[in-house]
Length: 475
View 1 (cartoon, rainbow, N blue to C red):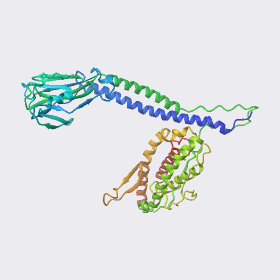
View 2: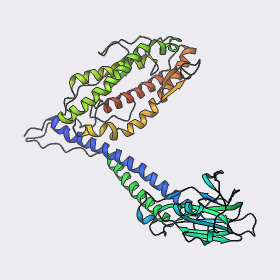
View 3: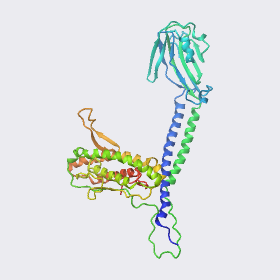
View 4: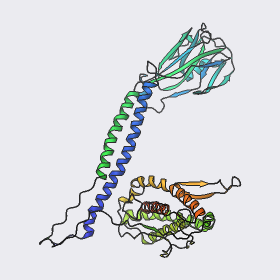
């Protein structure tokens, strides 16, 4: 019996590798979500214990509300219009407390809460101040004055109040919050003017502890599940069992390599430090490279559109259209040559050619072998979900930063100096080059490695290969 073909044996290996990447990605997302849940639950528990009074109310400081007319009324307060009915249906789960007193301690005051339409009907024709804006910290309040006469009857004689309190000294109103549109009113008990009260506001949610417990429990579950996925995805896989073959074993066999290890990633990004380099040319390369920037801007628009077409082609046929592949590969080659010349590396003074074709003798080369088949299922998730960890790394390597100002805002001019850690290291190398005439080899190797990483991720996200980009700088 003959051994199965190598390609057939590679299929389960590739499947295992993709499954491991999927487990690591979902595990990392689950851990991040778990940390958010644990932080939220812990924050709620801390607030409930450290920021509430002895009766469980979150309370503001006492502030003075004063007006020259007969009443002070809040603007309409919409409560629970979008919340589930059980939250504000019975008034048991959410409560507010208003504590108020008159600056003249012997003067009786009245505070009440009523439906907005009932309060508006009672205050019609009455002079009062409406609170249009209120901030507790720092305290500020804005009023809108409504001119009018004294109220016809004292407020306590009205029967529409759902909660009220009156008397001399400190008065406390407690109300179980219900769904509806409400107004809060403060007056002198006899309906006289002017009105002044020192008031504080408190709120209590009886289910806050349950929410905190639920967040903590969910955080623990997601943390355990995510950690398990990361462990399963990151552990060293067992090698596939060799196929049984008829006849005696070979007389001598070379040591078997670990199954599934890729000896070389198919996206090949190389660069050769082209010494000697001009000390000063890098100062004007942003200007010299402008024609390339203009052309590349157009090419990358086409790259994006063609990649969308390739997405559907792969989804339905499992193949990347060869013409689109060659064009997109040419855009990557062109981009790498321009970056290598300009502020992505500054590693050559040789001007990049205007071509999509490979230029083997140029110091910067890039190649991606054409894939005969691509996974139709993987194309749905690899460019956004599976690539999330890679995007985080690439954002550190290539995140943009700039010097100068916008060219339409004054005498400063926009000067693009690369991006992220790559741009920062290239800037350091350029300064050393300016003063010493040497490009530090260690910085070049690091910059080259980070550019390799970025282009591998770009090729993967552009659906050009199914192999997951390795987490390494080397070739």
